[in-house]
Image 1 (cartoon, rainbow, N blue to C red):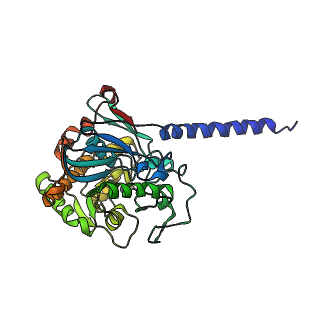
Image 2: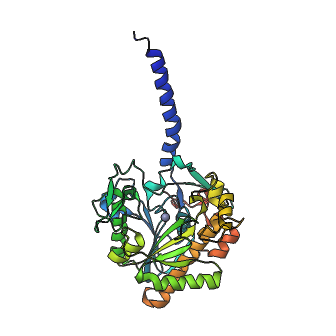
Image 3: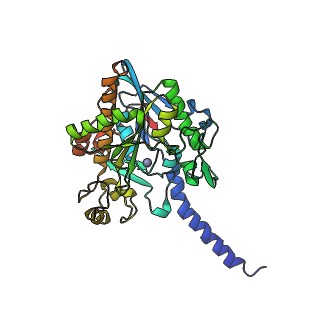
Length: 387
Ligand SMILES: [Zn+2]
C-alpha cells in the first residue's frame, strides 16, 4: 500500500472542504429568487424569450411585467439591472411594478434585465452576496449581482469581443455586458440574445421610450446624468431642467457618443423604433478607492476616503458627510423617468403615457425606498412572482 495515501486523502478532503465552504454560498446566491408582488397596475407577466426564442430555458430569460393602461396611448420600456451591481435601477423598476397604475398607455418593466448577472458576484472585490432594504414591516432581501453575466451561463469569452453588426473591437469581458451587446442577434452569444429580445419587444410593441437605469461611480465623469443620443436629447434636456427647477436635484444631460458601439442609448436609437435614455445616479460603492464594500456602504454611500477626495475636488458630484444614499438614487431615477414620460406626452399627445401611484424624489428621500415596497406575505394569492 502506498504510504502516502493517508496524507493525500487528508489533503484531498481539506481541498474538497474548502471548495464546498466557498462554493455553497455562491450556489445558494445563484438560486435565490426574489419575490416580486404584482401591483394594482400589472396586467400581465411575460417572458423575454417570447421575443427572443433563443433565451428559452436559459439563465438569460427574464420576466417582463406589463402595466396596460385603461386608455390607449404611448408605450415605454423600463430596464433595471442591466448592470446587476447597480441595484437602484432594479429597485426603481420594482416600485413601478408594485405601486404604479397606468392611466394612459402601457409600460413594459424588466427589473432583472441581465438575470444571469444578478446571479453572479465578484468575490475578489469583496462584494456582498445580498442586501436588505428596511421596510415598514421588516426587510426585503435582494441578490447583489455583478456587472457581467455569469461565466456559468456564457463561456468561454473570446480574446476580443467583435461587436455585431459594426465589427468594432471591444474588450473580451464586454461579451457578457448587456450594455455592450446591443442591438444583439437572435442566435448570438447569450447576452446578445437578451438585448435582441428587448429590441424585438420594442419593434413588435412599438415602444416609444426606452429607459435603461444604471448607477455610476462618483469619480467617473458620466455620472448623475441622463445619457441621450441626438433623437432623445430634447426630451432629456426638458426633463433635466424640470427636475432641477421643480424638485431641486441635478441630473444633467450627456450626449451619447456616436463612435462607440454596443451601448443601449446608442443602438436602440440607431436600430430600433424607440427614443432611448440611460439614467446614471451616483453610486459611491462602485468607486475604487474606498473602505470595505459593506452592505451599509452600498445603502448609504458614505465613505471617508471619498470624502477626502471630494475635498480635493476629485469627484464629479457634490459629496459630503451625508454620502449618496439609496433613497436619493432611487428617488432621482423615479422622478426623471416620470418626467421623461411627461415631457414626451406633452409633445406627442396621441402617444401620451400617464402613470399614478409612483412616488417622486422628495417622497422617497423622506420615507425611504422600503416604504414603497410591498410585503410578500400579505400579498393576495397568485400576486407573488419569483424572479
Ligand atoms: Zn451601469
